[in-house]
Amino acid sequence: MSVPAKRRSRSEARRGRSHQALKKVKLNKCPKCGKAVLPHTACKFCGSYKGKQVLKIKSKIKKEKK
Image (cartoon, rainbow, N blue to C red):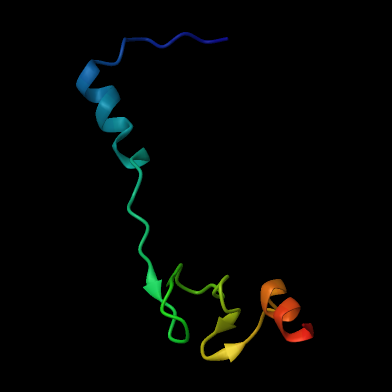
């Protein structure tokens, strides 16, 4: 296994890791229920995406049967 020729200084090592920082998650509001949703994903609460019903939510199905 090879060994580095020179030790990387503290500032150089930190500059190399600068792109690894965590970024804030940007959330949008669901147009149907108003809950926070990740962009380009279906709402986990109401099951809609772009105004259309995409997912069947178990809690709604149980309420309809009773």
